Image (cartoon, rainbow, N blue to C red; front, side):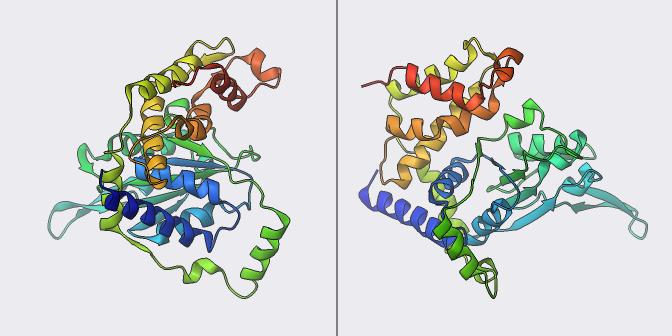
Length: 316
């Protein structure tokens, strides 16, 4: 890959990241991972406490790219047709006219996705996995750039429905924002004293440039040794004594593609073991189901993946 292409790609990453950081402070690492997931073609689940900036981050990402953006506030009474769209009979023309739902967009914010019923949640499955939806028996393709960034609140249980394992597996990464430092929170207060910074945020990258960035990321080299390393990491979750259901081959694919995007953001046309290790927990942990004994003992999926990272040999 030419140096000019690498420099261009790194510049695009930096521009988007810097633009988002004018709104979201103290979350540089999380923004880096979200952009990597976005460029890789995957979908992101932001799972964190209320008020940590999940929705604002998703809006800032969408505004930074000159692309279509739609937001769905998930509620218990939301229906699949509210997401996909519906066909309505036109008596004057005697035909059914399709009114497309908000899923026909480039970037979709699924806000508080765990508040919707399983039936409505499943309406996203085909779209996230296949890039298409079925409406009245007809298959409709979504846009070339289709990205779902969903949010959920883990501390609330009343009126929520846990995401099924099949849908959790559709998310390339599960990320947490966490709380910022005292200094960063003071800066947030100052920046929002009179208005919210996101109201004046402008796009910094065109849709064409971003689509090109995704194409360039596919050309990042992955050696056979590192392919084997990623497969060994994922396979270790399947044979771990405390895991009932390990990560799927989809996890291996997501890990490789996100590592490629990270390498590109660093100006490399090849991935390093550090790129894989950086996102392994975020890519694999949410896909694991632990046995009851492990859960009651306080073991978490995150700690299992961290243990696997320490035990699986890194290729030299």
